[in-house]
Image (cartoon, helix red, strand yellow):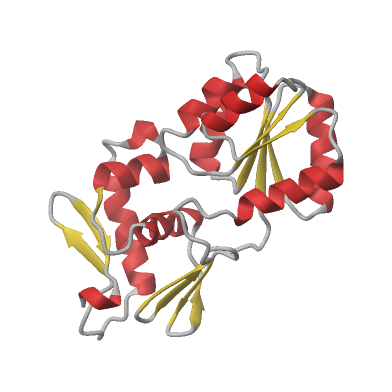
Amino acid sequence: MSDKSTALIIDDEIQIRRLLRVVLEAEDYRVLEAETGQQGLSDVALRRPDVVLLDLGLPDMEGLAVLKRLREWSHVPVLILSVRDGPEDKVAALDAGADDYVTKPFDSAELLARLRAIQRRLPFGTEDPHFQSGHLAIDFNTHTVTVKGREVKLTATEYALLKILAQHAGKVVTHKQILREVWGPNAESQSQYLRVYMTHLRKKIEIPDAPEKLLKTESGIGYRLILPSQK
């Protein structure tokens, strides 16, 4: 997988998007742009950026509404970038799930530092960026997955699927929850996606002759990533 982080800018002001693109690309980000809230939501679901920069004043819907809808199914780090500087705006955004808030005009160095900070925060309440179960190891900071010490290449979807299972390691994650968090809220009935990708993921991370498997199917319910203590 590429080491580049992907940043999605959701802002209807073309000058701001151009400025942010220059700043972010200079720091080796891959940059995506959306002019409306609806386009931004679609881009998060389909293109899965590593971080989102969200304006509050969008032409089709309030940025706060975008944030609330996003938090129904995604943990992607979100930095609000807005001309609104009132404490009530900041509190409302943070309460709705924003990770940080920067007012326009902004200092580029501060903006980049805040982006780095929110990307270091893992969404599942642990400061340890590493996960290991048996022969499988995951580095969440670098998106690196290794099996018996050898790196395996996962697609973005395979990695997102493995990450949610690792976040809830030892517990059953339902089909609906996985579909919602990996593919978005409109995919909850598309279980065929999940079966196909679980097959691909198993081929990449399981060891064929191993006596115990890492990924356990809970028939009719979901999947579970087994912890060593459960073997």
